[in-house]
Image 1 (cartoon, rainbow, N blue to C red):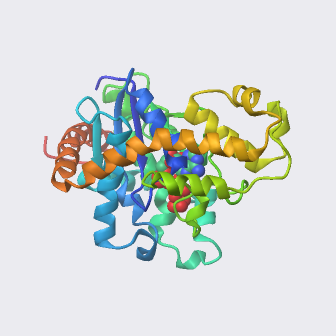
Image 2: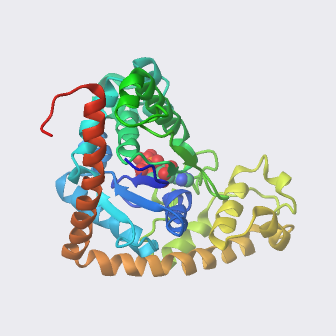
Length: 350
Ligand code: AQP
């Protein structure tokens, strides 16, 4: 099996995509297309790890799968040159997750902070799937033997776990890995997290210490990719700030999470550094900065929302993109599954 540089990442179809998903992940997905082979996945098997009341049931799930696909394409991902599909259409994800469940250690999973946050106090009542989420995520990446994974800051710990699982598989089956054509003993490459740009962790507009998130009960806490211009302007106007004017130096943002967040969003949308943004707006009041931010946000997001609307109006077309992508992803997945099974020692049809 040839070793190629390959990018993999996924987004859950669990509700409205927001500016955090866009700046933390999707913008980087688009950039990476220039120099890499990319696989972008709507991770619907991950979505169902939450209670049905969270992901909304069958009709909502199908609608959200198509909406995330539309967001990928409207943002500039090319499904002809790269691969776009939904996870549940390639059975290798679940199958490899089982093999990796037997490699990953319970102690490793017990340290995962996302499970602790999402399960909350009622841990006994969380699904086994939610606990196992990071192993499925490792399987998603390793199924394509991906080398680079663009994600937001919140996924860093899961990426480290994927690296540990890859390494333990390679070590546990070292001799077999080598006799099956991987002389360097590395069947699964160590996936590199790509956490880049000024907005790797976009915070809530209502509380600068909390991540912007689909599951926040306040819609005013986030800007959705489908929000219209008036809604975006209103949410930015209402965003929490402090009474001080904006600082002129980045250091002045250190103890001001809300100001830091808004400046970071502006910088990411404008393709500038925070320092550069402060050079223009430092010393000024929030009201004029917020007007400029709203204008920029609308200019960047409105064309995406329009294109998403156009695409989701034709679900048959979106489904055909996913089916075609799944067929190409499935062929790559099958190669990895065959090799993984041979390495472990399963008997199979040649
Ligand atoms: N606030 C954020 N800032 C930067 N990046 C973010 N990402 C999510 N939130 C932010 C990145 O978006 C990608 C897709 O995320 P996901 O939908 O698969 O899962 P998530 O991290 O659970 O997203 P949400 O929106 O915050 O959902 P809930 O409310 O369920 O927790 C990932 O690369 C993620 O890092």
